[in-house]
Length: 71
Image (cartoon, rainbow, N blue to C red; front, side):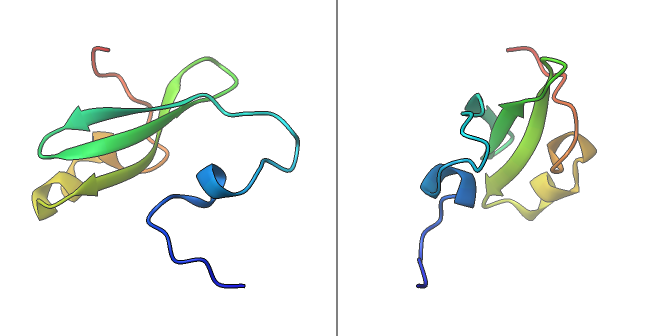
């Protein structure tokens, strides 16, 4: 089965461990950053969606980076 969707797999398919990850989206630059909370209760960048190519060059917006922006 092929599923054509802009959503990440975590949003479409249930977690294998049965736990729900806490996620949120915030505006950054001219795009939107999707964050999730890790085991240490820190927000981690999951994905960036932006129409500006310069947004993808910021190290704070790259997947896996710890989000230190004000909430």
